[in-house]
Image 1: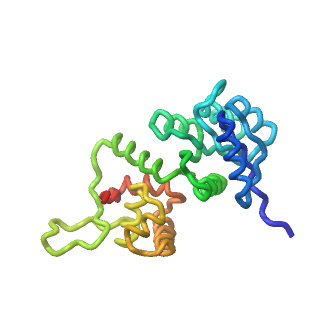
Image 2: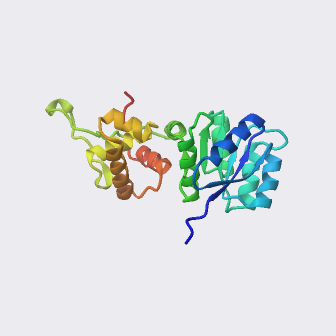
Image 3: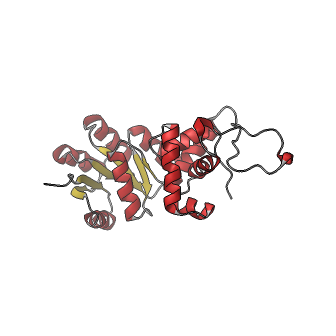
Length: 238
């Protein structure tokens, strides 16, 4: 009997030290096989055609063909290959063109091995592999484009009659705690950060997230952020 096939990954980055470091890091992760590395977008497109990887880790600012154009060409010609951007930049001029080109994941280069592995697994399963910071930026962009601010949902106990008009109940049968966790996801917090904020264990946070995902029908954190925004469950940063 054999286990599940390894996820085949191609790395594209124009900086040799960075590219070789990412390849070395991926080689230490179980379930991942690096099938090639490219020094620019043009080479990345050619290597995808040759090796048919499952996922490309794509830098954005590269010579000859940048990461956005390479992503667009890869997704058009090889729809079975997913792209996760791994870049130094998380500004709007980098983030949104990459997502529009077809990238399903977006990480900055301060991401650790666990976060990179999770993003690769997420896009392989059909979900989005976005860092918490990118999720928060998407929420902020949605908020900026919205015609009107949503009515916030109170995601916790309301103290006494002085709280004013009755608070809106969380949608889809969410408990107050699940709505609170959803609001913290929308703020861009990771599971460990949520656990510290709520003084609970990471396992408890994961249980709340599994429950709220099931109730709301979202598949990943990016969809959860959009859901939170639509229903006004955005919390308040502390």
